[in-house]
Image (cartoon, rainbow, N blue to C red):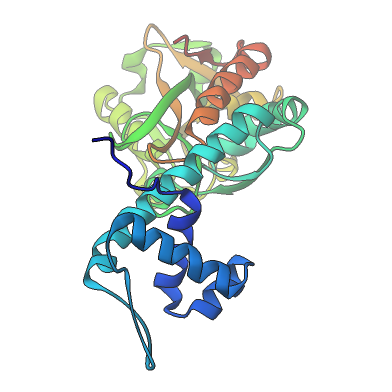
Length: 314
């Protein structure tokens, strides 16, 4: 015989969840914007369709039955999935019309975003970013907790359970005081770095650990007693002759225009690179759009900064 059991509706599940959380039909009806008789009638139809009693009703109030408690979590999972489906469908049909929380390291954000965000705004006029800067480990923790919707982070060290889209590779440049003997060379021999005093940022930055690895490999001396708090601080310490520094290519491009007191060099036959990626939670309802956004990032960076960085080609 065909199954004559009435079909459930999303509306009934929504009504069931509302009553389950308030344990009060009048209050739930007010929250839903419907009349109490309408709500009561729909819950009764749901119970008849399921052939279960979802609520215990008495003069003392309303309580979830054992069956109701068992089904509530499943109902909420279905409702969450429907909400996510509708959110993705809305973005696909209308484009993004919201504000996303974007996290980015302070060694990258000020020197990348001014080239990218205006172009994104032109493409998506309703899209906005609330940008916060933080060290990579703090960005990862914040993305887990929901403090960020997506982050730009060094590719190395990104947790494997994030969705990751590589964006580009950025060189690190050796910056010396113009009075340093090595500053006469555009390309510095690797052996020349032995014993060279290198300044860097505090160890909470991924950048610090990359510079430390370079120093260990080439025999340079990392100056832990004089760690900078920003790239500008490092540059000023180099000007004062306190040591040399490795500075990101985008920083050099953005902030150092023919400085008389400094010389930008490279290590001969040994490029030093850092990779950046866009990352988000794999459960994000905006994950379809975020993939599109990663492609937009790459296209804009390729068009505006291809002489500074190498864009990832998926």
